[in-house]
Length: 139
Image 1 (cartoon, helix red, strand yellow):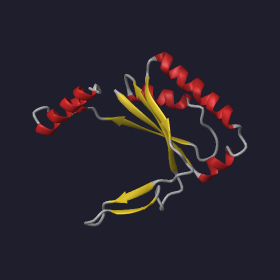
Image 2 (tube, rainbow, N blue to C red):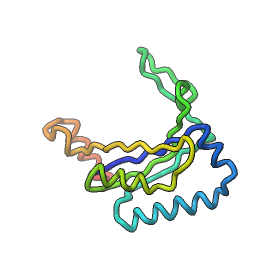
Image 3 (cartoon, rainbow, N blue to C red):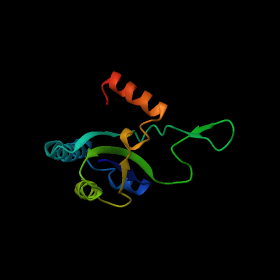
Image 4 (tube, one colour):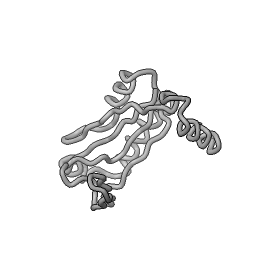
C-alpha cells in the first residue's frame, strides 16, 4: 500500500526553527530519509518552498479563479511530503511518528494513495492511463 506523509507547519513552527542551522536540519532529515530507504519503504519525497507561496486555482465558479496561495483561510502550510510503500496504515503511522519533526504547530497528515488497479479495469480511461504509464516506465 502507498501512503503519503504530508508535513504541515504553521507560522509558529517556522518561528521555532528560525535559529536552527539549515545544514543541521538537512542532516537530520537526511538521516531519517536514509533510514526509510534502507528499510525499503521510501519511494519518494520532496520539500515545498515556503518562500514562494504559489497560487490556488478555485473551481467554485464557472470560470476557475486563480489567486495567490496557498490558502487564505488557513495558517497551516503543507511544506513537504514523503511517499511510502508499506504493508498497512499502521506502519505508515509508525514511520510518521519517527519523523524528525517536533515543536509547536508541526503536524503530519497521512493519506493512502489510491492505485490504478483499484479503479474499474474495463473503463476506457483507466486502460489509457495504464498504457501511458507503461510507455513512460511508471507503471
